[in-house]
Length: 306
Image 1 (tube, one colour):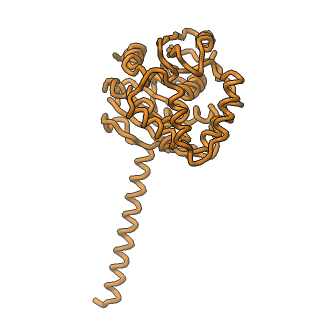
Image 2 (spheres, one colour):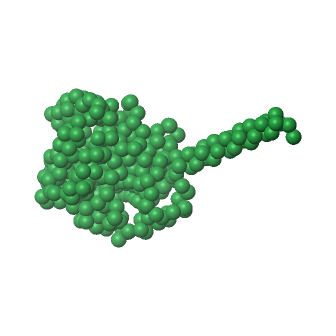
Image 3 (cartoon, helix red, strand yellow):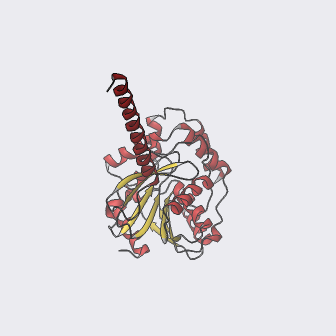
């Protein structure tokens, strides 16, 4: 066999191997972005899901794939790690999804698209792509407003709604102006002192130091464009049509909340027919951080999965 033929065969084999490797990597990447079949694993996993819009969301999942589905949404500047103290307290018979919203954590960071309706469209697509039904949707702060919009627009996938540190849809004018002013002035890299002070402002009762450090690090992952977009959305957003929410709704509020007062909660309850307010004394805006054991128990009792 000639040396030229040998070289040709080697080159052909190398090309074939490269093509095979590329095909394998493509399939593996598609699988990672699509997420595993729901029957595949009950072990805790951090995964990626690429939505039809092109946005990729990072989410954490644990529990029985056939269990009661719970979807958790975090507040501004957080990620799925917002529920780190809650997740270990939820039984394996629940299938729990803690989703990182666009612009946060390891989810995509688009330059724009931070209106409540943008976030809600992502979560609706997430539910559809994983074909989740009979869902208990839980949202904290920003995530609660997203959850309100998702529930108002829902076509039958959401069974129950849980709102933490929420309000009737929009902030008071002074609060909106203050938030917009602070957020619009943030520049990359996001200052550590801003991330630290912002997260601390939501807490009244102490939280574990290591957990607080995680919260600060997660806030640092959100670029300036996310904070600018959030500030702008607070100025222009409209309240979700709360009268369209017809499912059982539980509203959690800490009486030391710096962002929402008792009057806000009473108005919210009046707008969602059949909703119930649970007040945590001596507790701030992020009550699932401050009282994770009580919150987990109350959540499970509401779901009926305890």
